[in-house]
Image 1 (cartoon, rainbow, N blue to C red):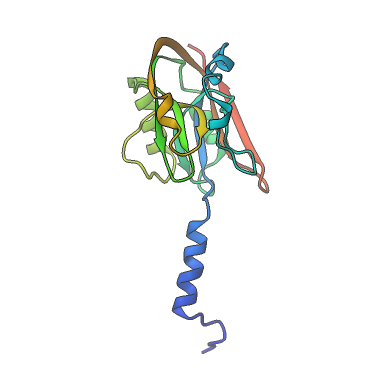
Image 2 (tube, rainbow, N blue to C red):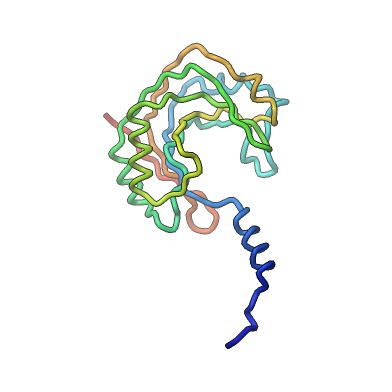
Amino acid sequence: MNFTSFVPFKNWLMEKEKTQSKKLDYGCVMLYAKISDWDKHLKIIEKKDIYDDEFKDYGLEHTPHCTLLFGLHLDEVKPDEVKEFMKTFKPIEVTINEISTFKNDEYDVVKYDVPVTEELQMYHDLLERRFPNTQTFPDYHPHMTICYVLPGKGKSYTKKVKPFKVIFDSVVYSYKGKGDDKEKIKVKLEE
């Protein structure tokens, strides 16, 4: 028996923690909306409140969208299968009337609450059942992110707004492709 590859339990455990603490890469299916005056929606955010990191991954959200399902396993899900599945979706119309936030240690997320329609819930559930995925939240709470702001700043943006309609007219599967490149497959939704 060769013991040269034996790793003490403490070292193995520490290495495991490092691996588990890294951000995992998953695929994400999102509904995109065309909102002609989206820039006006972004102007409610004061520049001094905006959170961003050195990679410019946060800040203002310039592409209005609503996540249907995040957490698809990249090693088990074939992008072409997701594309074919997305082709069965129809456009969805919702009425937005509220801005709310959720918080974590690094930032607050200012977002429009998207009402859970029968169609949104159905598409979410179908994706979750059809493709291997990991979920960390028990319930589906759709939203459209407006901006990531500094911790504690989100509450000042929480309010009811004049109701407006949004039509989600395309669906996108975003996933990590070759190397570290992000790939996107977009399908235009038609009645």
